Length: 577
Image (cartoon, rainbow, N blue to C red):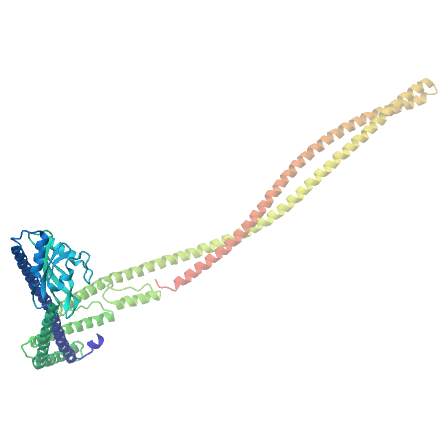
């Protein structure tokens, strides 16, 4: 298809003519073949109908003749059948020596003289060369009131018999039971007749094809060549005119010449219509070009930043006019949204980029211009508030830093004081434990003294007993023992005073032990309290240490906040507001 598409028009038309010629020949030959087949079918059908009609007439005539011949016969059916055989032995008709035959059911009873040998045979199982039980079929057709049967039957050719297609018509013989008569003809000559008809038609078809070719060569081809030449010439003129018109559309040329084709045929009318259309299009294009130039001028203004210009001219093309209306509407919408002059917007934004928020757009109309002015005002107010916040933050940060420094110093002093207090409490706790231990030793020594006093008390009692015994002995001795009695009294008096002193000492020791015990209990309670106070002071020391660390962290944070406030202040001082 690609090769055919790249061919020249003349070659395509030549191929078209050749194809038409070939198609004509094919159609003629095809129609000839179709007509030939139909003629063969019609010939075969007509000859077959005529043959069947002839066979029916022969059988009907023979059956009537037999009935007439047997009308006055009084004999048996076998005798009548014998008479029929004698009547038909010499009945031969047609060029193929056709004959009549009579059967009783499946047994032949009458045949011509040259087929007498099969009379009396039972042909119930007789088949032709195609396997057809033809006697059964013939008997069935006769029983059904008469009919035709197609089969093959030996035909005498010289001194031999050859199986040949044959048509037979059979019917019952009136007045005889199960006796039927028939005849047949060979149809091989029918095929010869059809072949003769086909040969005659082939000759006619060849002559028709030859005449068609001669007609194409002498008349059709020259006419086609002349038509093709005229058509191609007109097409070339149209092609040149259209190429100029397309060049004009591509702005390669400034004008288009009219197509020099003035014939009254379709191509001429097409050329005149194209010329008229080209003139109108050329005028319309010039008008549209003027509009496009106006649009380009407005676009250049828009490119320079101005949105106030509009396109006022009209084009011939309604779509261009609609586009211009949309373009003007777009400019109006942009102006209402942005403003009239984009350069003022760009200059203001540039000032904002340089942190000068004092700039604004004068006579702002567009929503974007108003938004920019509002943005500048808000930014200026925000920076002023930020400036005030920064100053306040700087002052508060400085105060916070000083307060945190004082708090840190106080926390450190408090930490040191707590450390000293914890040390003193630890010493007091140790002293209390020492006093408690010494008091326990004093009680132990008191108990020892009490034991010694008890021993002395026992000695004084013994001494008193001894003094009593000495006084008794001195009394017995009389005058001799009077001095010893005085001594004994003195010893007894001393022992009594000793016992009395020991009783007082023992009482004082008991009181002292009780007092020391109470002191030990108090000291124990004080020691427990001191231990709790020491634990609380340790916890307070740990908490105070955390407070000192927190104070230091807070001091560092306050310092960073102060530095941040200074940075904010310095950054704000770089901006204009």
